[in-house]
Amino acid sequence: MPTYRIRHAADLLGVSDDTLRRWIDAGRIATILVDGRQAIDGAALAEFAVEQNATSALSDGITTVPAVRESSRNRFLGLVTKVTRDTVMAQVEIQSGANRIVSLMSREAADELALEPGVLAYASVKATNVVVELAQLTNTRAGKAE
Image (cartoon, rainbow, N blue to C red):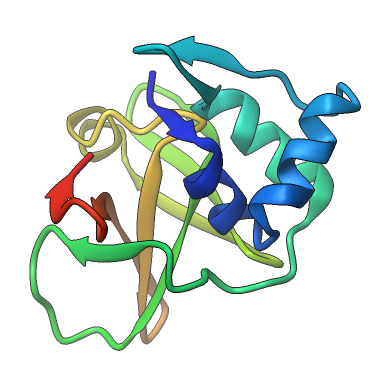
């Protein structure tokens, strides 16, 4: 399960680090320790994002790099909040700021991408199709992927 540092989680929610820390102190969202640092479980963050219906776009604190280049221009970075699988198809819901995006795809594709609540992903929209890609956080301060 992915985890997110406070700064990245705040960016994904569209709030400041201080606001998220106040919410943590108030018990609105739980943290865990990862390598001695406070972090938030991806599934818990996804659930919280749905509840909060974050309204701000990502700040400059996160630089995202798509896994592949493509012609689609309408790309939404967000947290997977729900995945419903049956034997053939999967329904994937992504919360991107105030936007809830739903994609239907093959179960095989959802399984190959290991999509589950808390995973950071792109929804690319072209015509009536939504393509979901995995996203990678780049630590701009250290110049490395996390």
